[in-house]
Length: 141
Image 1 (cartoon, one colour):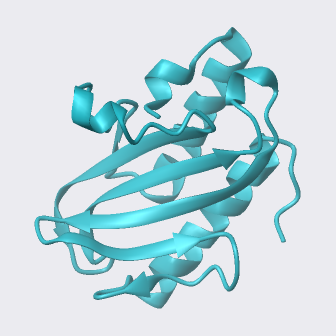
Image 2 (image 1 turned 180 degrees about the horizontal axis):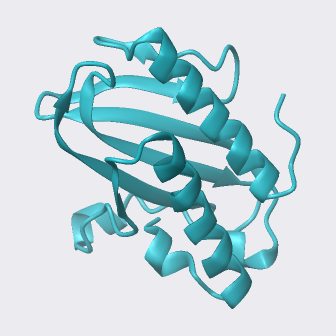
């Protein structure tokens, strides 16, 4: 669900802003999008109330990232406004050809897909995921 729709308290708004800041610290060219999903009937069918979704768009296609946008989905045990426990993250690299790679914090934490980011970018994405776990007070595996 769009991050902008999930804000139900000043504390959660601050935490979401901190997630965006953590991403921009590692990828300064990324422009944050707190509303990456359209608000239409077809899209609302797929809403996940236990997630916060943010997008980060880059000025052009990045060969190091192997994408133009990164979708960040934070998955919670319960809806985030109810002090939900962060279960994990899924990051997706998106280009005009669709999803290029996916990195999930379940398993090896390695990007998998058609085109994957370079090793240094993969490590920066993993560090970002650890930063997010710290923001939500959860230990990263």
